[in-house]
Image (cartoon, rainbow, N blue to C red; front, top):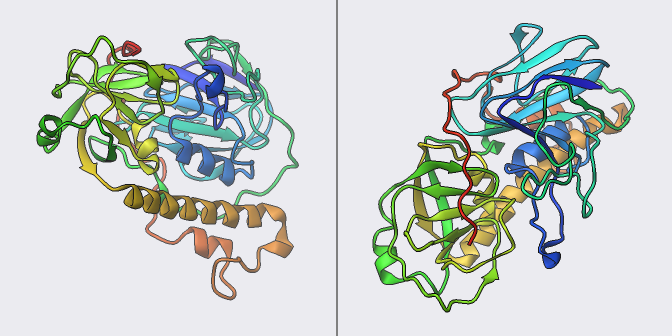
Length: 357
């Protein structure tokens, strides 16, 4: 069991989300699914296992039982009993130890996975917390002081001695480029101004992120509502774009001239006020190729870590690598990520959700 001593700015239980959009229910799920999948893989969990999503300022957690945990995502500062706590690693935590997660100078979110996966209240086939509707996770809300988190049992295991390549990590600001697909609503006037950067405003939450600058838009009161998807870029009448995140509603009436590619959706989950966003229009073929490449690398990392947790007899060789290459050699390809690095927390403006379309 984990006792919440300090909840952080907004800490919620999230998994990979639900598939109930046909019922008008947002998909939800972790805003940075890459961080969730890799954190789960590091502790030997299935990819869908529920974990704790941390936003901008993290919680203080007292462990009342031994556990194996991994913290992945933006470079949050973290300590375990006052000692630096490494990110992007599986770390054993003993009963009675206190994990303190501070702030991050870049990005917005991290995911804390516990071996076995967090328990919570399921709704529509998912444990994800939907804050607006108030269901899922911990009573449909963010953590509070005194909450107690529990997790499912998995046999204890030694953590892998590997670290993941930094190339797998989701890019964080302050400068990011988003690959977008153009829809029939992308007018020439709009395309002409996409070459300049846009700034993330203080209106940013799990539903959407509003940008400060404006784009040309036409107000059409007779426009019918159409399905929304995470990544859609809506243009409300004031012209300030809204980038939809996992908790966005399923339908909207605003024009949607751009859609962020699936490969770049985790980047949306790491946007924070003040970040600068540039657009890169790509073809459908290029978007599918980018997603395929990203998914292939993620699955390769997950497979390598599954091999580790499968037992000593399975660690000798990996299916995707050359003879004799160990999981440590494979997964540690690339430079040392120097986990745990990060700056001091800069207080953010309070969350304020963009108005629904």
